[in-house]
Image (cartoon, rainbow, N blue to C red; front, side, top):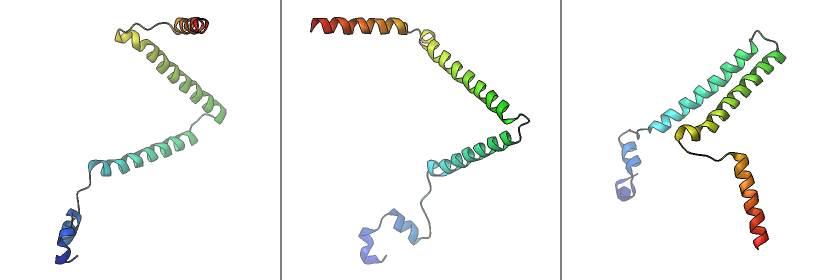
Length: 110
């Protein structure tokens, strides 16, 4: 960098001239911290499972049951969501029969 090329300088070059650097954004600081937290969480869970007092088969069965209960709870919540929001949703079987009948009638018309 010299004075002849001053027109080609940008903000980074001027900051570097004075021994400074641009401030990092929140995302540049937060993303590595969140990644390290996730890695630590996975390692902690793994160590916890290794030292669990249950034997492997029993532990896997227990985890499988808990996961199935969680999935079932989420599914039930999602099914009830339209009712809670006041949206009338047709029953899936009714919708399926209706769409099948519409397909049949459109194919006979053609």
